[in-house]
Length: 310
Image 1 (tube, rainbow, N blue to C red):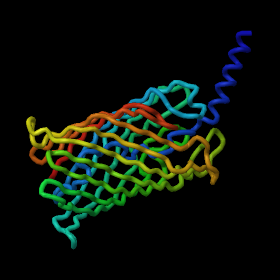
Image 2 (tube, one colour; image 1 turned 180 degrees about the vertical axis):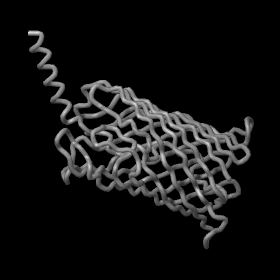
Image 3 (tube, rainbow, N blue to C red; image 1 turned 135 degrees about the horizontal axis):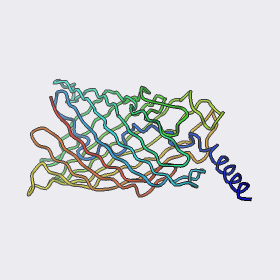
Image 4 (cartoon, helix red, strand yellow; image 1 turned 90 degrees about the horizontal axis):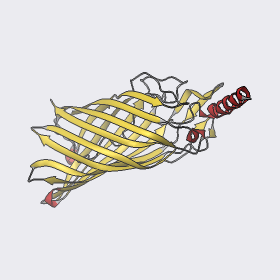
C-alpha cells in the first residue's frame, strides 16, 4: 500500500511538471526594471561615462495561476551591469544633445524549487542604442530635463532551452524609452523613465518536454519613478526619496501563434533611495519592495549604482 501511494504521488507530480517546463519567466531578465530612478532624465556632461549597477533580488514566492503555485520557490539573482555612455562635445540645432549607450548585464541566478531550474551561465543580453534630449528651463529654480533613447536588446548571452530561467532571452527586443526629470524649487525633483517593449520570436523554445517551437513573449509597458529632495543640511548634493517601478504586460505570450493563458506579467514596487554626487562621481542606493505581482516572482530588489566620468 505504501509503494502504491508513493507511486501515485510520483504520477501526480510528474503531471504537474509537464506544463511547468519553461512555462514562466519568458520576459528578458536584462530589462531595466528599477535600475534607474532619481534625476534620471538629466543627461551627463560630454565625455565617456562608466555606470556600474550592482543588483540583488530575492523572492520567496511566485504569484501565478499556473501549476507553479502548488510549490514553494525561492529565486535569488545577483547581478552586475556595466554601462558605457558616450556624449560628444557638440550640440544639435535647438540645443539638443545626443549620445550612445551600451550595457551588458552579468547575472548569477539561483533557484531553490522542486520543479524550476536555472541556467548556470551568467552573461545576459546586450542593449545598445542612441539617445537625444535637452534641458528646458522653466523658471529661475525649475527645469524640465528629458531624453529619448532607442535601445535594442541582442541575444548574445547564455541560453538553455531546457532551463526555466535564463540570463538571456534568446530573442531580439526593441525597447525605446523616454526619460524625464522635473527639478523644482527647494531641491525637489520628480523623475520617470517610460518604456515600451516589443519582443521578437525565440525560435528555440521548449514549452514542455517534447513540445518545441517558436515563442513570442508579450509586449510590455513599464516605468521607473522617483520623488526626491536634496538635504542641504547634510550636503547640497545629497538626496533622498521614494523610488520604484511598475510593469504591465500588454499582450499574452504566444507559442506557435497561439496565445498562452496566464502569461501576462504585472508588478509594482516602492521603497527608499538615496543619491550623493561628489567630485563628479554619482553614487546611488535603493531598496524596492514588490507589493503586487502577477505571473512572476514577488520579492525585494536592492540596487547600488556608481557612475564615473572619464
